[in-house]
Image (tube, rainbow, N blue to C red; front, side):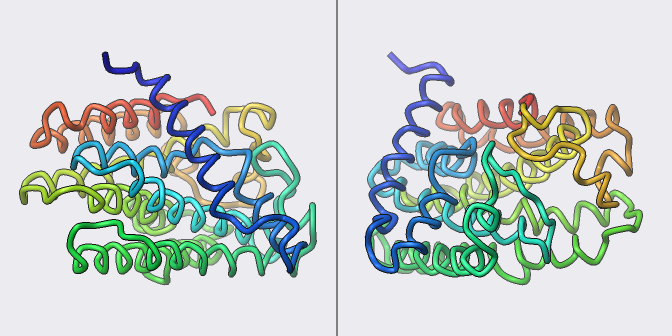
Length: 297
């Protein structure tokens, strides 16, 4: 009998905690301080949305869990690195992340920089070291996908636009262009890598997955903006209301909270419709779209 969504999600989250614990260098391995900080940045926290999406897409393509856990770990390490860097004083200057002090507060700024550098390198090491796809060309495409998602045309570029936009009002299309890069690119990569770990999919299914990933990636950020404006620091595990205080343009500042939630719901419906070619194989992806848009934290 198939597990319900909560059980499946909990199982993947627990598995990824074990996998990341195993793949990260031990805290006592030299250089011990850096390795301890890498583990601090990555373990014991977060919803693991990107690994969940990776596993869900892998279910749609019939991928082996042993492959998916490596791909998911690589994506999550890129995500953890981005948080360590985003929280730095030269970026968003935050002191709380996942309910605990940020990496530069717990260690120091130089260590937080090195944590990001090392986690990014380790992510690509994992993709190169393990057999993740049946065809070598597919695995090379997966590496290229993650590199593009993390770089100047993806996450790093989105962060650059975000920093430049502080104190300005952006229209919704401009916000979309920023967050398709900053948040959406890595979420899309999680889906693409997960699917790549399995068998080949028909063109319509691949296009549907890509459309789905783009919709849920943007929806995730829209909901994040709403929660930043409405939820408490204790609920979020990070400083609530930070975007408004820093003068950052958000979907709430552009649309208002009610219309932002409506926009997120429209994106959810678009994401669900995109999965039609995959049929029942996309069950977990559908459930994750619901979770991302309807979450309260």
